[in-house]
Length: 594
Image (cartoon, rainbow, N blue to C red; front, side, top):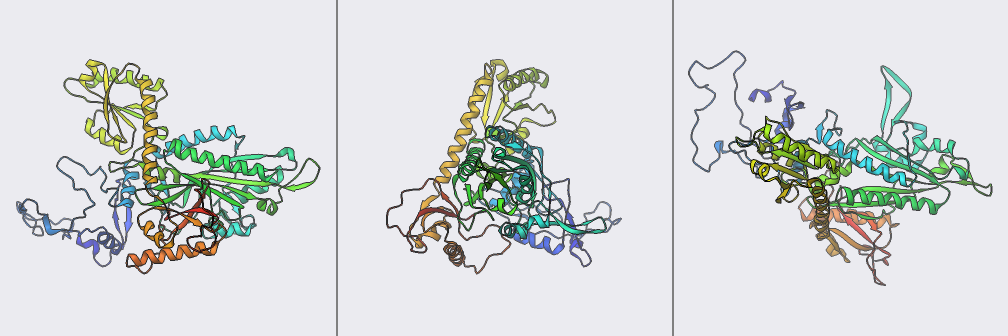
């Protein structure tokens, strides 16, 4: 309606990607959006309420329908090549963007249409729907068992922290200061002192550690908490990857010696590697962060780094920090050793967030939607009957329920989709979008021959199998799928992992979406690290004919160090740093990162 853009209209309400929530937009912003996605909207002059055309005549503001020549586009509108056009009989419930053509819009499509995310009216905050929260539940259940084997116990600490405590550790607070959210009012009253909402829990937990730890007999103290965190990001928010509130686990431990704390750091990092590789089927590179990239206030940071082939970017998967004795000194966490001497504890902290779900989606998803690894799939198999005159729901139900029981008895998360308002084709599309690893089709011939058709989500393969012992066979099938998905992702990552020893080859490889291993003069050289960031940004922008990038953009073209891998290639004697020309002491992995 052209009146929506008339003077005096301040907001236009729309329903983007959902019919249960409205979004208010300034008219000028809506026009910019149309321009940005290449859409030329048709402006119509709608009549006012109560007005209408004379009976039997077409409205005067609408031209009679004309038949367009075959192959031409009605109205001469430009067509966005990324967009799918609906064909007869199709709905717009399918993804509207291709992964290879517009990765960001594809990702947004996938997480909404698969019912993982709903948007919220506060920017950077999202609703985790049951499909995504169940994945997080599965991760929690696995992780709790594993940290229990290491003697780690779960606890919970308050959401709020006083300004005095938060600012006690200078380097720590400086690292988080721009992202801290503050509570300053209670009802109509100003608080006497502002209270921070938890950006991380070191300064919340450690005063309690000081009260609890007095002797070497109190060590080690190993705690974990599952909680939410608020970091008021100013860069472009992205569901799961970069949000103002997110869920995580954070482990915090105290030890008598540095050696014990270092063992804990590596044990936690190994669990993170397993979460990504064994559960999410996503390969990662474990390593140390440089001094520039380490945790604020910590002694040393270790990390697992993943790679998103679809966008050509790396992403930090999870981190495990050796905090040294810094926080122990700040919060007076002391103990008497066996000789009666007072000592400062050595501490660690380590965390994994719901960002990991987004990484999995980006790595495995395709143009049909989610592709879930079986070990984290809320449903591992769905049974779809092909109902017809030859096979009614009444006939199919006992057969399908028998299969379902066998699957449940084998420990498989499965569902019999017995909804009679949807046809089989609609159900196929629905469960493919949601990424269920295996679809089990039951038709009239299958009932006669006591078999089913198995369709694998990640590669589309189909096979017919007997229902005899189907539970045992499906367990094997799911393990095969899990391993195959990991190998496929690892192959895609390895194709983009290259070595470079001279600067001239560095930015060209970044432009090819590669992870780049280079000889490096050491993680302590912050000045040269900054030089590489600035120089790579400058050369990348120049090659694209651009002068600068938006500071709010979360995906810079600049290179950053991802980690110094634990698994180091051989470094020949006399090798020089590719940037500084100083003697190289290690290989470091660079990339463009989220």
